[in-house]
Length: 230
Length: 313
Image: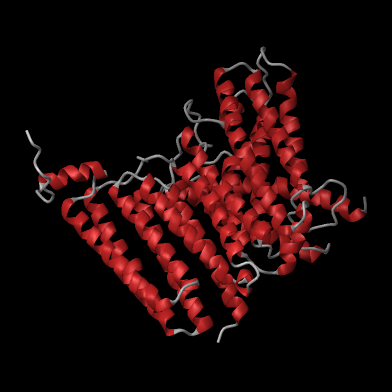
């Protein structure tokens, strides 16, 4: 068995890795690297799950690690990378509402608010000092940062990536705070949703903004709106 | 002021002046390799500096005393700043030496005079370079201050010497907060030394030059001093980063053997970092001027995060 202090140290360093990848996803304009950074973020989550397993020995954590590794480190990045090769978009330079710089600054403020709010909730309990508190803060922040990516980007593909990184936040929060079996079910459902989104996108094409996408749905007769009364 | 400290002043200055051209040429070499070229020899910067030192100085008839004073002021300010970052061994700090706030001001003093000299000769390139440099520095300055504030928060001291003693004493290669600080310092290093996403040090193209624009009117040994001061500045910032992240090898006592080892380790670590900088520069294109704040925002984000963590936990 590895020493507890070392494992805690490793987990802290992995936390830093998650912060760095999240900041990168939120601020980059290069689409090709976003996918690999997302895969890296998921891999970091796998490592955290393994480290927690060595601390607690709960078999569920091992299961989470395996499921995450297969789905989020291999399958999903592979899918998105193939799509990217087809559509030949390399840069994402269109933004709604927020530029990358301002979303980075806002996410900083968000993290601080979450930290203070959670600190008030767990004040006085032994959880306050531990790793789990920090993991929870990071999980929620990652979720909100992913949300910010989702609404500040125009391209459908980055929206999906923001959604995926949001889901990583849920997973992180789940690993550190809530009961695990429930979270696994939750995970699978979300993964299914993502798969559905991916397949629709695969069949219709995502080299477009959402408005454009709507038009294509019309063109392929996938979406039939009631006819206007003349 | 004791004997040890005087020795430190001499050794540190000599070492920094001796090795800084090496790192500059190393970066060029790595960049050449990634482009599939052979590149100049690693001693090329030394040769160019010696050549420039032998040449005569020509002043524009429009220029004032600023032009004549600037190379010396810049070099002096940077060399004093170099004393603040121990390279070989860490003595007891005396007076204000090692104070992090003074360190920042010295760097700014050098930059201020460089910008003035750019304006002084009245050429449009110099003016443009100065204007760009000043607008960039007004954006990067808050970030720099925040990064160094984070350093001070983490180590609970304002003195760089004490920080080095702490890191080399702990023996740990890198704690989580130090990784974040390392990234921020790396960004500061890139911006302060006008390297690629911000400025391209290799071109003299009107559209892009910032640092080169300002030194365009300098000639002869004055130019050599300007180039050398830029190299020393880069080395000092590199060493600040290295000695905080991987303090291995830095001597805390004054022995001959310890210092020799320290110099060798220093050159090796510096070369590795120079290689990393070269690869980083090769991997990206120069950014548009108005996109630069997103680079600074990254450093700002990480260091503010550190301060939050340090204050609240």
